[in-house]
Length: 93
Image (cartoon, rainbow, N blue to C red; front, side, top):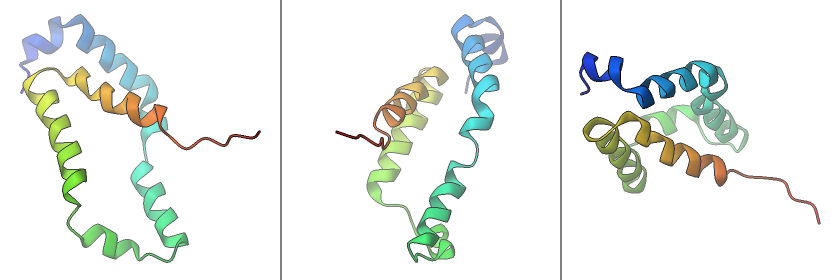
């Protein structure tokens, strides 16, 4: 875990905090959106919440925790950027 001294003196971390302050509302609720979409497809929300995540999901999240806690919190932006870049887009030819 990062010490308070690092948080207060790390210019990159402060800028990252500012970024999160500006964007937190647009990043809120994605978990509910996924559950809502699943319900539209006929999948019970409660069953999704009770099941153990697949190993692949645990590996992705686990690696993010590792980098955030053992290297630098800003490393989470790598996954964030990747997810944003590969999000579904409508394309018309």
